[in-house]
Length: 167
Image 1: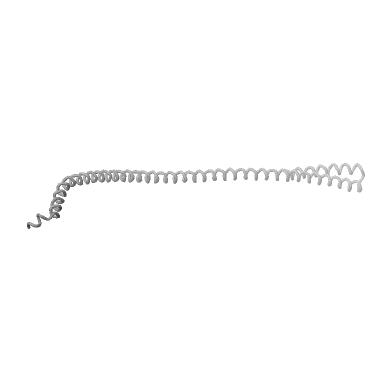
Image 2: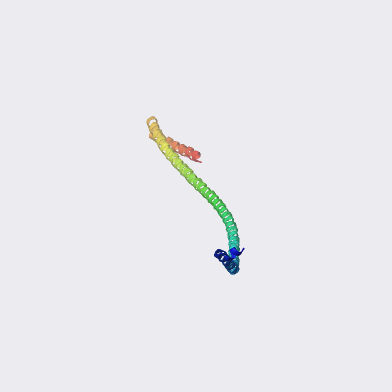
């Protein structure tokens, strides 16, 4: 053992071990303090991350509620728009039907009026023709006094018949 103590490498080793022991105590407290501080920072960051995650989760659920609310509002608005459209279509169809009925009635009235006018013209022409034909026939076959009486009688009869038909 004597020569171990005389060996300079042994003393370097001993000095190194003492140095490491002294420095390790200081280094140990520095390392533990640094690690503790880092652990606190990491813990704070984790707490902040958890708080941010909860806030994000809260915002997400709020946005989802708002989204569902908006979807429901959109659905209600679309339904009201469809109902209003159907109502407007019904009103427009009713107005159109009324206008068509009115136009049809006016056309019918115009046709009846034109028909009555044409019938009246035909009767007038027929009576004029009948009177003319009667005068011609009577004038050929009878004398003028008799023919005038017969013509007047025929005119009255034709007028009465036309009046009776017109009613």
